[in-house]
Length: 411
Length: 151
Ligand SMILES: Cc1ncc(COP(=O)(O)O)c(C=O)c1O
Image (cartoon, rainbow over all chains, first blue to last red; front, side, top):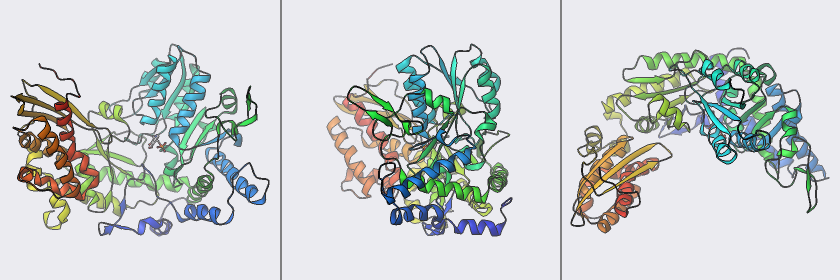
């Protein structure tokens, strides 16, 4: 699909059973996909089908069922490698979510490869999951944490990033590929080139980015890339860390247990080859099967169509909200995805969200796990509408009408 | 919007709540106080600071500064009146009954009368903690759980 026509959109929406639900007696207008996306029937059926027809533990049994389950689980690795254009399927590590993927890097790369006195750079628009693991590392290992500022438009300040890199002590730049609050896309290839020029590796938190646009880790020249299944129309409980083979090989394990070893004696254990070295314990088998279906679904719709559809929606939303007095949209990045955060002069974000909810409109209100960014923006919380491949223009108009009613109510 | 406002929404944003959130009467730090505590709702970023001045063991005055939604501000403002003249024990007991009121929508007793506008919160489970935040800060202050200071 290259574009999403109204007929396509109706068909796509029919793929998501939950979109037929009503909330408070009104059709559900779900504008909170950035927190977690809804699931297409293909994902639901893949997971149920696995449990009904071909389920057993993986990598362990010599029996037919285990072989089928292992095949299904491992084929998700190929799907994820394909999605990211990773050169090697063994570079795909399954985690629980993005948070665990970043913690894995902070643990194994941060504690195993970085040295005290080195620094990690994050940006001023990170999710807590890309802040706190580095603080833990800093406090435990004497690794400095530096924060690259953003401009008032909500874009990464590349000049400042470069000056943070200039002393050559930065071992890793760990940065969001797309802000979950401002919608800003970071110019990832330029960030990677900058990081590499000063000898640093680069991790992109792709939790939001990969939902809206194709990602090619080779074209970006990334070193690590993390994403989470449930935002990509897949199930909860599974995420992906991609990293270059040589990095994964140099890193010590994260968790210890079954599946991640080559051999165990009381004196010492040796580690399995990558990626299994990083996948201790029974993995999220059913979730992996769901993720594969989600990846297939997104690729069948096509990133080109998704990106174009969401860009049109975002433009419409920005134009519409700009026309409502007392509404302030945060961030005006040139390059942005389908996330719009706003505040209102007359009402706090929670009150906005409650009033919209009673009109059947789901938005998120709060700090969006980005408290330092809230402080930078001078707010304590925002309301956020986020768009997905199933979002319609009518839903944005419903949001606008809802916001007008919030205004009437509170002023 | 009022004609189409659902009943539970009208109850949540009852007239008193809206008035108090727009023009709170006690939203300032006390110049002279005996206890202070801060309440945070880490999930949503609401914050309220409560200052208490006591006379002969009873609450003589309460001031607060809140950053948050209409419910949390109105609840703090109502608290600043409802807890006057109580000792720490009675204030703690009232705080518990207010928590029950906002969770269930029901509660007996004349001392709850002026807090009844908060009853509508019970239909909105995610907003209960907005209504109880100031009371949690008050009981923390009275327990001396956050350091008291005088400026
Ligand atoms: C930019 C960003 N990073 C990380 C995360 C964390 O994702 P998860 O909670 O699935 O680990 C999120 C979403 O919550 C996010 O938006």
